[in-house]
Amino acid sequence: MKQSGASASSATFLNSSLLDAAQGRVPARQPVWIMRQAGRYLADYRRVRSLFPSFMDFCRSPEHVAEVTVQPVDQVGVDAAILFSDILVLLPPMGLQVDFKEGKGPVIANPLRDDAVIAALPEGNLNSELGYVFEGIRLTKKALGNRVPLIGFAGGPFTVASYMVEGGSSKELAKLKALMFSRPEVFTTLIGKLASVTAAYLCEQARQGADVITIMDSWAGYLGPNVYRDLVLPHTKRIIAAVKAEFPHVPVVHYANGAPHLLPHFATLGADVLGLDWRVNLGDALRAYPKQVFQGNLDPCNLYASPDQIRAKVKALKAEVGGRAHVYNLGHGILPDISPDHARAFVDAVHEE
Image 1 (spheres, rainbow, N blue to C red):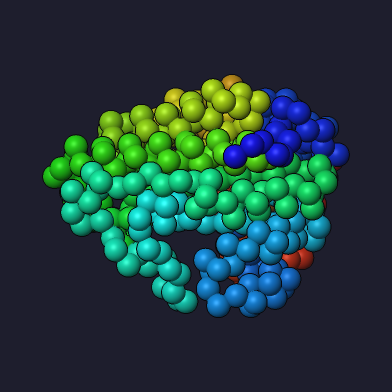
Image 2: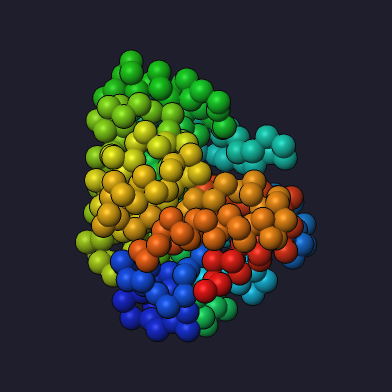
């Protein structure tokens, strides 16, 4: 697939504060975006979502993907758009059937239960099977008009593997961890294939116009430090290295939820920005890694407070950051019943001098 979008190395943005901060420069105005910012807390998102019988049908409509991706830029004032999609769009090209059940989340019809099936997993033709994602990027770039950068993303290989093996969401990841510990060579085959597919997928996103790349390894915190170091870190590092090798000017963000004990390992991944959840003391992280750019890390539930209380929390957060380059965000995704006015209060507070 030919390159048709402008990468961060060539585009000029009306608002480049996120790119400046991600590359270690302190911008004139602090950048902020919100994980899950295109979502149910916005009435216009709910209107568009109601047009589709299933979540995956929604994801496969590039025109509507572009519409909801741009909504929070226009309505909340964030400094970047993040492509509306899902980390599990990689599963169908690898032969797994995924659906999203109301109130239950993702359900995999044919979860991985057999070592031979894992060994034979296809790596898919991403250009043909995920063309709707790349068309969504191109349409979103056109709609943004270089006002702000566009963030592309994928799930971390451990997190995506958890859905493939568990068959959906899990509170323990017992099936995946049983595979890791009883047959580590099979687990390594699985996560190695996922790393290759993910690297190709993210590079294609950058080729089509994504200006920043984010890896969401949401469930990495289920692992102990040594297990993460030995069985997962090398594969995530390989993904980041592949993106940086082909697109050296596209910043890479790595985020994991509930994993403060893994921060020393995350710091070795080679990511330009490390996303922190609210369980990490930001001041401690800033002192421990003075050259690392961080993202975060306000508890999403702070947005239930009054706008004045939100501003006070942001002021304290900014005092911790001081004069460093930083990407402001919540420590996890915005909750669906948050008032858009409170989301705007958060964004406005970051932008205040």
